[in-house]
Image 1 (cartoon, one colour):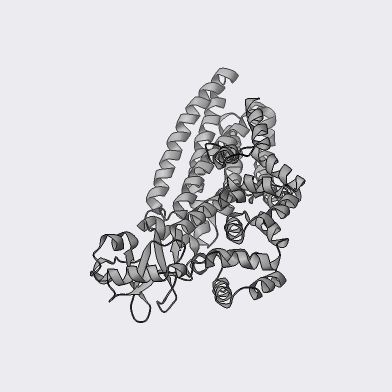
Image 2: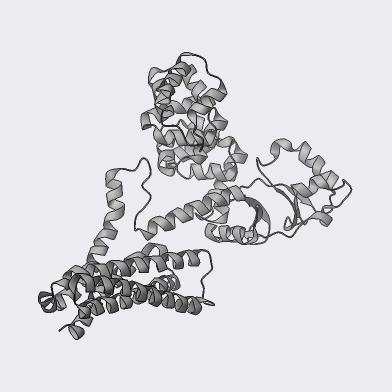
Length: 473
């Protein structure tokens, strides 16, 4: 009740920016649930002053988060209240589906002004979401320099370094001194990238030969040549896949890196804030792919979700039908010992979980380049050993339980041996399946789970029934 009273007081009386920020954001910097309806009410009432006060408490990233909770109609009404710079920052932070909806209702002239305030990589990412007709209108409304930068970026392949990079860089010839470089930065401050960490030292053909970190510039004497303080650079080819770029940044602990075209000429830079987004995006894709689903965003429709998941469920149904064939083959044995029908799902389920554990480790190791041909055999034997030990321990526990409940040591032995076999096979499949898919050029995260499920279910049923045929009958 006290919280509601506070909200009413803020609605009636002018609130300070600090009050509004406390109302808008929780301690974890997530939007408070009561804040979103207040924005929606201000939009419905057409209260521009109240809306301006509410939005003043948010940074562009928070506004992007807010728009994800609003209806399409409210988002459309909110956009005109954002200045071009804020709108540009918000567009670069929006989820893809929400951004496409916002862009569809955004006037071309307004969008063009927002794009002028954005870095070239973010602007190109937004323009790429536009329909062809609107893209032409927006680009035509932009200054020639900004338009050319976006068009050049869009010419590169999707998810490549060329798409990821920003074209704005700070470069200096290697014969310059620290003082000359600092003076240049001050004179050209309006033309500098919004965020940069290094001054790239280039030769006469504009090829990077080193990088002078800004922190070194500020600590060095003015008469020191750049060649004395520059560090080695790790060049990123413009056509390199963004996953490879993220791997290089992580391996060498980079904050920024120059991007070069095939001839070695400097054409842009990639900074660590871009890589954080790539790592998050790729991780989300792998997690969803392992489950056989696509991202269900806040604006996803029920039919869209059904369409993205149905194919994998149908494929899983087909593989399970094959697994059931093992049951049909041994149906006479099941009829003689009904307890087998009760225990078979346990063997299958435990094997499936064991396979998923190994698979998750293998897919992560492949993605992080920790698993390759040089150590694949060693890791394979390690996982087989772990699978055998785990299977043995689980089998002993399960065998004891079966003996207590069914008073049949032969049945306990049957289930125990089947568990050892299935967990062992699951461990082998969890490594071999993703390695095989990787070798064939397929994404292990997308396809492995279906094969592992098929393997552990079919082998689980078969192991129980085959061993039962030898021991019990």
